[in-house]
Length: 99
Image (tube, rainbow, N blue to C red):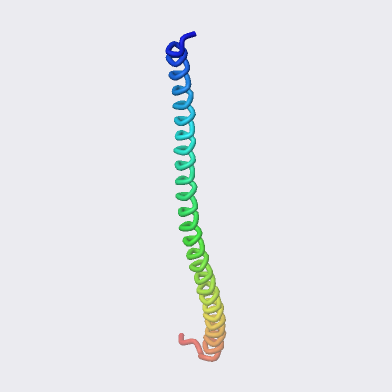
């Protein structure tokens, strides 16, 4: 076999194999970079949502405290109304009816 013929066959095969390997490696690197970028985006979004959840839980706790205060005030008003009704009934029973 002639060296020139051998180099005409082996060199293209070797370069095509090397090109394929380099291309494959670049594809895997690109895919890994894309996956890492996606993971970073999801981590950032998760952190933002976690902060929103914490803020909403704080607001919810404040609303629960305010609701308890309103319920306590409502109970006090109901007791006062009951007392006023009782006083009104006493006054009504004491005062003579006009005919």
